[in-house]
Structure formats: structure tokens, C-alpha cells
Length: 352
Image (cartoon, one colour):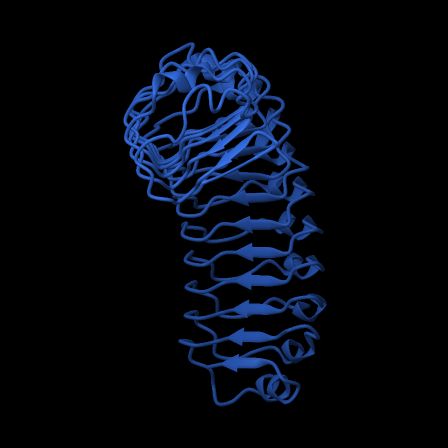
């Protein structure tokens, strides 16, 4: 355990079974870090510390909490990886609440303070959330992943300050078009649900950097995805896509494109316009040829073509100047194509 003159108590991972000290000892403490210990309960006086601004209790055995609403200075509460079945009532000034990996099955209305900026409720047992959640207009990041949600209402479009949203690993069957009204910039995770289509409105997220749509039931994509000019990474693996819209070639900042495990038989030639692309994963598709102009992908470093139906390769494949790894295993290439010899000679790792 360490304390210092700056008002901090730090004792993570020490095997503690109780909170060290007393209310008097910790009256001036601003930060308490007791993460990754063996705490099963907390003393009631913890809820009366006047200066406490940050409380870290991740990775303990807590099944319940004392009343914390009196912690007027508290701004961040970290409770990931405990055994909580209920969401604590928030102090009025709380800005960060992390409850990932607990056993919360219900979120009662009115438990969350209006000043919340960062909220993580992922890895719980939620089947729904109250309408009051969508009224937290200060939220900048929201994690509801790994629950049992079956729908997200249109009211989600009111979270206009949101930069990051994680709805992956739920049971969602539709993507609300109102997501396109958000100001998302960092990421939008929607993977491992049961979506069958992507709304055109998603294309309005032109500042979004990362979009994850893996492991759904998508058979097609809207052309509007090409308007998402800020994308640097797009994940579409594990769907049922048979073709790609030509507009994907407009994603001029895209660095990673993941298309593994679909039903693609061809690629649009417009993909050759992705001049910033570094990583292209096309494993486990039905490709019989690569698009003309592939040599224009001058920054492509990793190309995964495993388990397709390629018999031959275009000569210009050898002209990719940045290609460091090319994986062609589980295709049925005719002989040893000349482009592969040239790639090996300049040091590219070629797997066949």
C-alpha cells in the first residue's frame, strides 16, 4: 500500500480483504485504487469521504456497495469485473462509470447522473435499458456490448455528444437509422449481432474512424458507406456478402479492410483507388481473380487470399512496392506464377 502527500491511496493487486485505514485516515484522499484485490464488501464510511474524486475497485468480489450518493467530489467510479447485480445510484457529479463484466440484469430508471460522460455496462445480462439512458446527452462513450439486447430505440440519435459506441455481441436484428445522426468519431462496434442490412443513413458518419460489422447476416451493403470519408478501418468479416459496392473505392483514408468469411466471387475494380490501404483480408471467399489495377495499392503491406478459388495471378501483383506478406494457401494455382518469383526475390514473404 502506498499513500502520498497528493492525497492518493494506491494498493492494487495486494490480496486485500478489507479497505485499509479509517474514515479519519482517508478524509483528505482524492484517489483510492484498490483494484484486483479480494474485497467482498466495503465499509459504509467509504461513502462519506468528502474529497474522493476517483475510486478504482475493478477485479474484486463485490456483490453490493454502500450508499455512494454522498460523494460530492466523485468523478470516476471503476467497478469492472465484480459480482454486482445492481447499478449503484450515482453521485450528482459523476462523469465516468465502468461496470463491465458484472451480473446486472436490469437498469432502473434514474440511477445514472445527468453529467455522465463515459458509461460502460458491457458484459452484463441486460435485455433492455430504460428510456432515461438516451437522455444522457453528455455521454461521449457508451459500451453496451456483450449483453442480451434485442433492440436499440430511435432515441439513441439524441446522444449527440457521443464519440464511441459499442453494441457488439448482442441480439440486435436491426440498426436504427438514427445512428447516422450521431457525431461518432472514434469507433462504432456492431459485430456479432443478427443484422441483415445496413441503413443508408450510416453513411452520414463521415468523421467515424472505425466501423465493425463482423459476424452478422449481411448480404449487401449500401452505396452510402463510400461517403464515410473518415474511415481508417472497416471490418465486414463473417457475413454473407456476395458483392461490394463500387463506392468503397471512395474511402481514401482506409488503411484496413477485413472481408474474411464472405461469399465474394469478385472485387470491384474501384478498390484499386484505396491508396492508403495497408491490410486487406480476403480469406475464405470465392474469388476467382483479382481486380485490374491492383498495383495502384502502393502502400499495401499484407494481403491475405487464403482459401479462395484463384488459379492464376495478374502480373502487376509483383509491382506492389510495399507488399511484405502475401498468403495464398489453399488456392489451386497453376504452377509457380511469375509474380510470386519476383515478389520473393525482393523479400516479400509468400505463402502458397
